[in-house]
Image 1 (tube, one colour):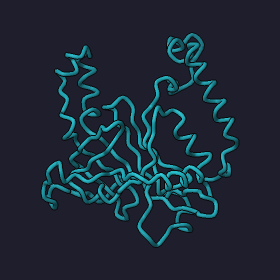
Image 2: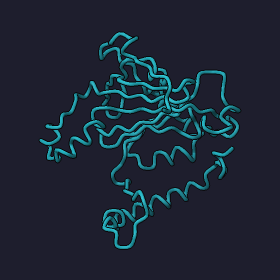
Image 3: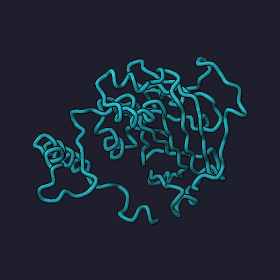
Image 4: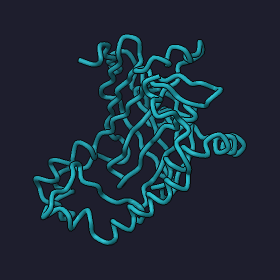
Amino acid sequence: MRFLLVVLLGCFLPLPSFAESAELLVPITDSERAIVEANSPYFLPQETYFAKQYRIVRVNTELLLNAKQIQITLFDGQSVTLEAVDVEADSKVLDIAWEGRYLEPHYISVDELVAGDMDRKAAENVLPDLNRLRIFASQVSFDESTRLTYSHLFPKFQKFRTSGPPLYGVTFVLQRFGGIELRSLASDPEHHVLIEYDPEKVFPLPSDPLEPGDARAALFENPENLRKRQQYRDFLESLGPDPRSPDFHKE
């Protein structure tokens, strides 16, 4: 079992009202945003390529261990409120797995999905991901001289670990909103990027190589997807080489 310490929030904290839900994603000032952009000429464009819109934020990771409810502000005045139902962390709190259920917007039922022309079996399969959100946080360290982040799974993590509050890379995907994701920046662990996917840029990829005559080719290799894939390859090439060494994760 990866996580050893289970935090049962409901047993220790009173149940607050929606008004007491704390914001997980802390907004930043325009001047702070300008600094982040200047310090991330490679990784910020890379992480936001598929975005229709995005926000640079700080993440209040303490809420994942201490709050019964959290709020996440998205885009265009939209936000969600979630109640923690399960929080797991290892004994050194290097990894945190948080799971919460939606309080706002309301719980979606199978019947609602079926009424929207979804097959009942498919509705039953997707329902858990629509009514709950999983957030994962993993502790990292940061080399200021190279502006590179090191996972706790690799040797250099200890060398660049600070004595201050721990730094975490935090990720989640909101399936309920058609593709909103929180991503960390490899060049700046104090900031994350919330992106809303742009369907005009996104393209599907097979999980395994296609064999000749594979029926899935019509989905993955149609002219539109091939165009998008080439456009993405051209974009990556325009960024230049990855500033990390090829054996970065072995250091």
